[in-house]
Length: 372
Image: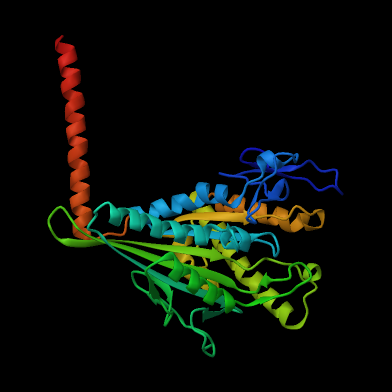
């Protein structure tokens, strides 16, 4: 990783290294040291210490933007993709004091709510939390200990799109509440040991946080601005011979790869559409792509983290991930503020009024200059 460029080279081949450019390219394979409290920060004595990216750097450059979008009323999605064991769950959830994007996001949204309340703002805030996993093409509610046979049904709403019917959505009033719910959901997650990862995620996990701001608009009416944030930890793509998977693990791996393949097909089709080529996007081919439809091609600001392995034996999988991410960056989504139509009209009229005032000011200044 140099700047925002990632270079990959196969030591067993004489081929030229392949280069990929992204918004950010983070190095985190080595060059770190464990601090007194257990946090992994840069080790300045190591050759790669200066370019080592810790959890806070990743959050400040990615997670803070998701939080800002929530306050403005935009939907946001952040999902991590990569082979099993490459560090997706580390980036999204983290471990102990090395908190990932999800807990840091949740912690900061409540900090900012408290700051605004202390500042005398009369806005009311509501935060709700949900957590589900897609295991073998079935939706499981991770906040419900009772497993339903066949899982939750995936339904389609004419305006809201696809959703999991019967999913438990719980109100939370503090970060402590969210932490408790996250721990409860994490305990119910489907993990298993493979030859490549002792705690491999065997399902895709989606954490949903809905943030509602209720306030009085310029017309004196009560209105609301809503933001839906989906934080997605995908199961790792894998090759059966690398993981040593057999029996149930092999079936799980096949289901994981099938849904990730469907996700890849959707990304490819959306990239083609962004390039001017009309292609049907196969959202309905898997439960994962149905639930991520809005994030991929709808009303959402979306960030993709591609987690990579530095090992030479994983060259093919790493190259595949980089190509996947390179195609994903071509997709364009159209995000809009989720607010009451009346409030939206008032805001747009106010913005138009400000634009007219500014153009009038420029015209007067230019006219006076010509007279002189």
